[in-house]
Length: 109
Image 1 (spheres, rainbow, N blue to C red):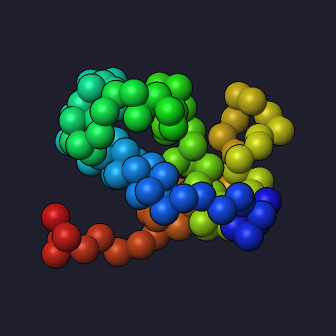
Image 2 (image 1 turned 90 degrees about the horizontal axis):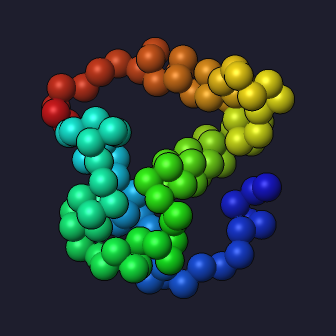
């Protein structure tokens, strides 16, 4: 599925989803995935918990949808569906190898 095949979303919906994803990533980096709660995410994103649940089932669903968006953005559609459930998708391995090869910038830290 290409980006053009996505249904057109309301700008407010896109902004809310991005805010939730950004809050989730920031908190995951800061505290670790296991420590992050939906309450933490909604507080950081400044949205109501009900709003979170309109978009995602739980933090695992948020992570899955975020990764799907990344795969599509990076044109790695094979990463979304894996043939072998016990092994990481080939697209994910490609993406991680690409990120590992990138130079680390200390200016953004």
